[in-house]
View 1 (cartoon, rainbow, N blue to C red):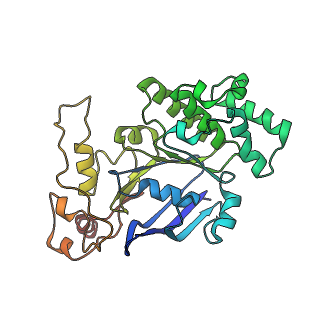
View 2 (tube, rainbow, N blue to C red; view 1 turned 45 degrees about the vertical axis):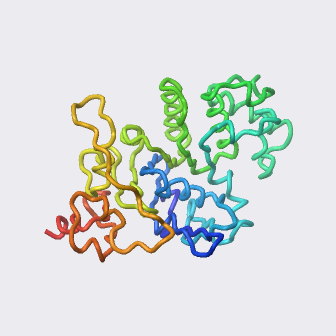
Length: 321
């Protein structure tokens, strides 16, 4: 049984002067226990908004539609009152920028224990003891529970954020660029920790990142988003050399390859505005192999191989043939 089922997720934001922005448009995916799933794409394509919608953390100006279930239980339908019972207990998050995710005037032990107290999982001495165990789990001495966030390095604060997210033993962990601004050695340590946690604890992980080589090495599957839509999904290690969507291929062409001699080629143009209606394929103005029908028709995700889907008319032509 899949631990996560996300079906036809949409997010709209109301604009102050009228109108709407539609940053997430029909996103669907599923995750098995222990699966690591990557979300990649340019800034503004809807990655972070998608995972914030899963956790119910979008501002009041946002409208969310669709279905999200954790272990068979729908978590969005009941609104905030229902979501509060699942947040951090069934689904938790490691935020981008660990220093901003931690309260500077509370000890780290208090912050790790807080979700347990809020959900009634553990109280007082038991919660403090569990917080110390979680610190040890992420490679920080238990005695550090009485220290404050500013006393830790960036990599250690990221470990603290992971410990806090694990407090209620969630089934799903969302990680929004957890290695941003960390040096290479610390990045490797954080990824090694996340790998161990998903393998040993059985958690499913959604990783949002711009680092395409990281996704290929770390994730089991990955999805490429563009203009709020999922344009390709497949085995992470295949997307680099078996891309079925022009955007995915161009993303990898724009990524430096330390082991090859292929030149880095930037993608021309910019993503479309999301506060106006998009007719046809949203990537057509930047595509290097457009078709006539792309100007008027929207390509849908089509099976391109085992576990592989792409939203491109050229993929449809190959599959049909």
